[in-house]
Structures are given as structure tokens and as C-alpha cells.
Picture 1 (cartoon, one colour):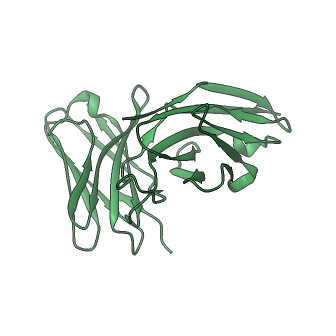
Picture 2 (cartoon, rainbow over the protein chains, first blue to last red; picture 1 turned 45 degrees about the vertical axis):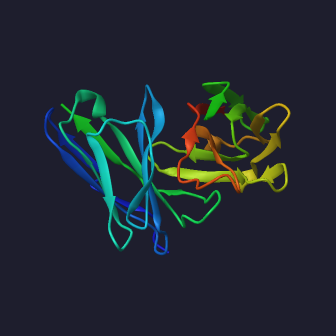
Length: 114
Length: 117
């Protein structure tokens, strides 16, 4: 079974631009969660999508948004990029059932904002 | 609210000696707890999980952890370190069984494990 895939793996953008990252979950998984990893703040939860609906949200500004498609693939978008948005963005998929589901992580997208 | 504190940012051991990575948690709900490992330039991999069954949990690669509710701890141990264990380790808490959906993981700050030959 194929794992979680994320595209692109690396991105370089400039301040003020916007960016879209993509995540394809493991087949059969209906939940996709997004995390931001930085040296200073560590791993922080952005949001979770389940059956095309945002089910959980972290404490990030509205510039960070996401969506999920009917095939469970998910995208996240960051508008008006700031230098501090430079990070590794990880997505994770799970079955999304009630109770704690094991989350399987992708390799991440490394975003650099210049 | 939930939070996780990893008590050591860096742990150094010699190959063949025991490993202890310490984790304390705080949770308003009955928690589920995980340990994940991240090797350089690789994704996060689940080592083990506690979800209200046995308090001593065995994971992959010889790791195990014990859930101690009275101490709010979930320390990770391994009897004998191997060079390949060198990585970043994350203790994670989320809501437990019966406490609502659990798509949100709360990560500790991570512990870097160095294994010396």
C-alpha cells in the first residue's frame, strides 16, 4: 500500500506570494491533518479535514487555509507569505474513526520564504 | 487542554547501553499517548501508542513505554541502544477513547538522541 505523498517536496517563494501544497493520503484514509514544523516552535497542528469538512483547527491566522476533495486528497494554502512561514509542512492521514487513530505522515514539503 | 513536556532536549548514550527519554503530559481528558521518531530528512514514524489498554506498551525496534497516570508520565525506554537509533523523538498526546475525535496531535518539543560508538 502506497504511503502518504506530498507535493512538491521543496518550494521557494518570496514574501507576499501565496502557495498551495498538496497531500495524497493512504488509500482508504478519510482524515488528513496538517502540521507545521520549525526549529523554534516545533511541530504545531494546523487543521484536520475529514470527509471534505474541517473538523479541527489550530491557532494559526486566517492566511492558512485548506480543503479536502471527495477522493480525500487535501491541499493547504498560505496567502501573503511571511518570512516566518518558512517551515517543513507535514501532512498525516488516518482512518478518521472515533477514538485515537494512528496518523501516518508524509515526507513533508520544505517551504522557504525569501 | 492538553500539553506535553519532554524533559530533555538532548540525550547522549553509548551503543549497547540503555536509553531513557522522558515525557510528562497534561490532559483534561483521558489521554492517548504516542511516541514518534524522525530520522534526518525523513518523515515521522510511529514507535508505539498507548490507548487505555495495557499500561506497558511495546513498540517497534525494541522500544517500550510505560503509562503512569499518577505521575502523568510516558517515558520511552530501550534496553540497548543501536547506532541506527540516533534520531529525533517526539512524545505526543491526543484525546483518548471516548473523549471526542482525535485528529489533532499535540507534540512535545522533541528529544535528540545521540548514540556514540
